[in-house]
Image (cartoon, rainbow over all chains, first blue to last red; front, side, top):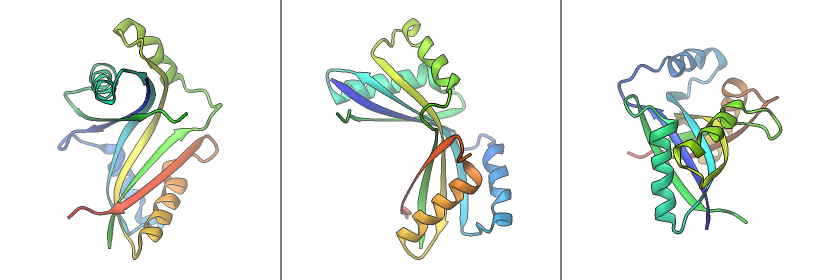
Length: 85
Length: 85
Protein backbone atom coordinates (compact mmCIF):
# COMPACT_ATOMS: atom_id res chain seq x y z
CA UNK A 1 0.00 0.00 0.00
CA UNK A 2 1.22 3.45 -0.88
CA UNK A 3 1.51 6.30 1.64
CA UNK A 4 2.39 9.99 1.33
CA UNK A 5 5.07 10.90 3.85
CA UNK A 6 6.01 14.35 5.07
CA UNK A 7 9.19 14.87 7.05
CA UNK A 8 10.07 18.17 8.67
CA UNK A 9 13.62 18.74 9.89
CA UNK A 10 14.18 21.65 12.28
CA UNK A 11 17.15 22.86 14.30
CA UNK A 12 17.04 21.77 17.93
CA UNK A 13 16.25 24.44 20.50
CA UNK A 14 19.42 26.26 21.48
CA UNK A 15 21.19 25.78 18.16
CA UNK A 16 22.01 29.12 16.51
CA UNK A 17 19.64 29.84 13.61
CA UNK A 18 20.99 32.81 11.65
CA UNK A 19 18.47 32.38 8.82
CA UNK A 20 15.53 32.92 11.19
CA UNK A 21 17.32 35.83 12.87
CA UNK A 22 17.85 37.51 9.48
CA UNK A 23 14.18 37.06 8.53
CA UNK A 24 13.09 38.50 11.87
CA UNK A 25 15.26 41.57 11.36
CA UNK A 26 13.66 42.18 7.95
CA UNK A 27 10.07 41.95 9.21
CA UNK A 28 9.61 45.48 10.67
CA UNK A 29 10.92 47.15 7.50
CA UNK A 30 8.29 45.28 5.47
CA UNK A 31 5.51 46.21 7.89
CA UNK A 32 5.15 42.78 9.48
CA UNK A 33 5.27 43.91 13.11
CA UNK A 34 2.57 41.33 13.91
CA UNK A 35 4.92 38.42 13.20
CA UNK A 36 7.35 36.93 15.73
CA UNK A 37 9.06 33.71 16.83
CA UNK A 38 10.22 32.80 13.32
CA UNK A 39 11.85 29.39 12.92
CA UNK A 40 13.00 27.74 9.72
CA UNK A 41 13.37 24.15 8.67
CA UNK A 42 13.51 21.82 5.71
CA UNK A 43 10.62 19.84 4.41
CA UNK A 44 10.63 16.57 2.47
CA UNK A 45 7.67 14.86 0.85
CA UNK A 46 7.84 11.41 -0.67
CA UNK A 47 5.88 8.26 -1.42
CA UNK A 48 6.50 5.09 0.55
CA UNK A 49 5.33 1.51 0.03
CA UNK A 50 4.42 -0.26 3.27
CA UNK A 51 1.94 -2.79 4.61
CA UNK A 52 0.47 -0.53 7.30
CA UNK A 53 0.44 3.15 8.24
CA UNK A 54 2.52 2.37 11.35
CA UNK A 55 5.18 0.63 9.25
CA UNK A 56 5.25 3.55 6.82
CA UNK A 57 5.64 6.06 9.66
CA UNK A 58 8.50 4.08 11.19
CA UNK A 59 10.21 3.78 7.83
CA UNK A 60 9.84 7.51 7.12
CA UNK A 61 11.32 8.34 10.52
CA UNK A 62 14.24 5.96 9.91
CA UNK A 63 14.94 7.54 6.51
CA UNK A 64 14.79 11.02 8.04
CA UNK A 65 17.26 10.15 10.80
CA UNK A 66 19.68 8.29 8.51
CA UNK A 67 19.73 10.50 5.43
CA UNK A 68 17.79 13.74 5.74
CA UNK A 69 18.70 15.14 9.15
CA UNK A 70 21.73 15.59 11.33
CA UNK A 71 20.40 14.08 14.59
CA UNK A 72 23.01 15.92 16.64
CA UNK A 73 21.69 19.33 15.67
CA UNK A 74 18.26 18.68 14.24
CA UNK A 75 14.87 17.37 15.29
CA UNK A 76 12.74 15.29 12.96
CA UNK A 77 8.98 14.97 12.70
CA UNK A 78 7.50 12.48 10.25
CA UNK A 79 3.83 12.07 9.34
CA UNK A 80 2.26 9.69 6.84
CA UNK A 81 -1.18 9.36 5.34
CA UNK A 82 -2.65 6.99 2.75
CA UNK A 83 -1.80 8.22 -0.74
CA UNK A 84 -4.51 10.10 -2.55
CA UNK A 85 -5.53 8.23 -5.67
CA UNK B 1 -5.37 36.96 19.12
CA UNK B 2 -2.31 34.88 18.52
CA UNK B 3 -2.00 32.22 15.81
CA UNK B 4 0.67 29.68 14.91
CA UNK B 5 1.48 29.87 11.22
CA UNK B 6 3.22 27.28 9.08
CA UNK B 7 4.45 28.18 5.61
CA UNK B 8 5.84 25.61 3.22
CA UNK B 9 7.75 26.79 0.16
CA UNK B 10 8.31 24.26 -2.62
CA UNK B 11 9.74 24.45 -6.13
CA UNK B 12 7.06 24.63 -8.80
CA UNK B 13 6.53 21.55 -10.94
CA UNK B 14 8.98 21.53 -13.82
CA UNK B 15 11.73 23.46 -12.02
CA UNK B 16 14.91 21.40 -11.72
CA UNK B 17 15.38 20.08 -8.19
CA UNK B 18 18.92 18.68 -7.87
CA UNK B 19 18.63 18.19 -4.09
CA UNK B 20 15.73 15.79 -4.49
CA UNK B 21 17.48 14.01 -7.37
CA UNK B 22 20.57 13.50 -5.22
CA UNK B 23 18.52 12.11 -2.33
CA UNK B 24 16.70 9.73 -4.70
CA UNK B 25 20.01 8.43 -6.03
CA UNK B 26 21.19 7.68 -2.49
CA UNK B 27 18.05 5.77 -1.47
CA UNK B 28 18.81 2.32 -3.01
CA UNK B 29 22.28 2.19 -1.47
CA UNK B 30 20.73 2.73 1.97
CA UNK B 31 18.10 0.06 1.40
CA UNK B 32 15.18 2.42 0.93
CA UNK B 33 13.85 0.89 -2.29
CA UNK B 34 10.32 1.47 -0.98
CA UNK B 35 10.68 5.26 -1.18
CA UNK B 36 10.04 7.32 -4.33
CA UNK B 37 8.84 10.70 -5.61
CA UNK B 38 11.06 12.71 -3.26
CA UNK B 39 10.54 16.45 -3.23
CA UNK B 40 12.19 19.01 -0.98
CA UNK B 41 11.12 22.37 0.31
CA UNK B 42 11.62 24.91 3.04
CA UNK B 43 9.43 25.27 6.07
CA UNK B 44 8.80 28.34 8.23
CA UNK B 45 6.90 28.50 11.49
CA UNK B 46 6.04 31.72 13.25
CA UNK B 47 3.54 33.44 15.51
CA UNK B 48 1.18 36.05 14.13
CA UNK B 49 -1.16 38.51 15.84
CA UNK B 50 -4.48 38.91 14.06
CA UNK B 51 -8.15 39.49 14.78
CA UNK B 52 -9.41 36.35 13.02
CA UNK B 53 -8.03 33.12 11.62
CA UNK B 54 -8.83 34.30 8.08
CA UNK B 55 -6.87 37.51 8.61
CA UNK B 56 -3.93 35.55 10.02
CA UNK B 57 -3.94 33.17 7.05
CA UNK B 58 -4.00 36.05 4.58
CA UNK B 59 -1.17 37.80 6.40
CA UNK B 60 0.94 34.62 6.52
CA UNK B 61 0.42 34.11 2.79
CA UNK B 62 1.40 37.73 2.09
CA UNK B 63 4.57 37.39 4.16
CA UNK B 64 5.45 34.15 2.38
CA UNK B 65 5.05 35.69 -1.07
CA UNK B 66 6.91 38.92 -0.25
CA UNK B 67 9.81 37.66 1.85
CA UNK B 68 10.08 33.87 2.10
CA UNK B 69 9.52 32.58 -1.42
CA UNK B 70 10.49 33.42 -4.96
CA UNK B 71 7.03 33.39 -6.59
CA UNK B 72 8.54 32.88 -10.04
CA UNK B 73 10.03 29.51 -9.12
CA UNK B 74 8.27 28.50 -5.93
CA UNK B 75 4.81 27.61 -4.68
CA UNK B 76 3.65 28.65 -1.23
CA UNK B 77 1.21 26.98 1.13
CA UNK B 78 0.31 28.71 4.38
CA UNK B 79 -1.76 27.28 7.23
CA UNK B 80 -2.63 28.88 10.56
CA UNK B 81 -4.18 27.63 13.76
CA UNK B 82 -4.94 29.29 17.11
CA UNK B 83 -1.80 29.32 19.25
CA UNK B 84 -1.54 26.62 21.89
CA UNK B 85 -1.46 28.19 25.32
